[in-house]
Amino acid sequence: MSKFKLEQAFQTVQENKTRAFVAYIMAGDGGLDTLKDKLLFLQEAGVTAVEVGIPFSDPVADGPVIQEAGKRALAHGVTLRGVLEHLAIYKDAITIPILLMTYLNPVFQYGLDAFAADSRKAGVAGVIMPDMPLEEEGEVNEALKRHDLALIRLVALTSPEERVTNIIEGAEGFIYAVTVKGTTGVRASYAQEVGSYLQRIKSKSSVPVLAGFGVSSKEQVEELGQYCDGVIVGSKIVELFHRGQQEKIKQLLPETAVQAK
Image (cartoon, rainbow, N blue to C red; front, side):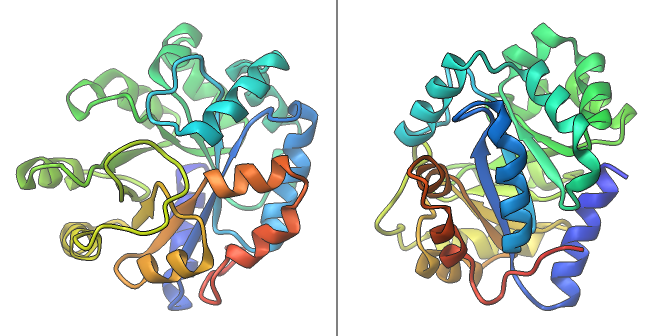
């Protein structure tokens, strides 16, 4: 299933005329034994998919909340291999798509084909690598394609028009539209041009467009959802899990979010 599972989830969202809600969590924050419960909680809450972050010592795209979560996970000895091994054990219990958010270094250390093969065995549907430019994705993308995994591409608010067009061409799964000029983290508001930026990408893209970075309230979820196909919420969810306030995560989901069955 892999990549197809992700496509099915978005098809369900589209058929129900709703908006996708993708939740981000840091694998191993609190220990790897907590990962299954977090995934099942989010699945029951009704999220469309879950982005599982892999802790890394030099996370260039992560803001302070996710960086601290990564440090806590690394202190527990969490590795990419360990995450995939855990996911493989209970993959049949997780019916929503799982995406891995990782950096290039751990993947190259693992071995491209071995990483893709083990990700497939673990039930992963797609991979996000924020430090990999479009021009350098060749070998990685080939390995992922061999194992039917989607490579999720990111578009920046500052990306020139020609680059946006190149990123969208041949995109799989969805386009991750970064809505701030900086790292992840809670934002009080968005620049005025964000709405038109999201609409512009959506008008060009044949795959869903999701807004991410800085989304931290139900109001922001619904505001951004007007301009694209859904949102990705990370730092706020990581923070609420860390505080033991996971019930508040449900309050972030808009009325238009739907669980992909």
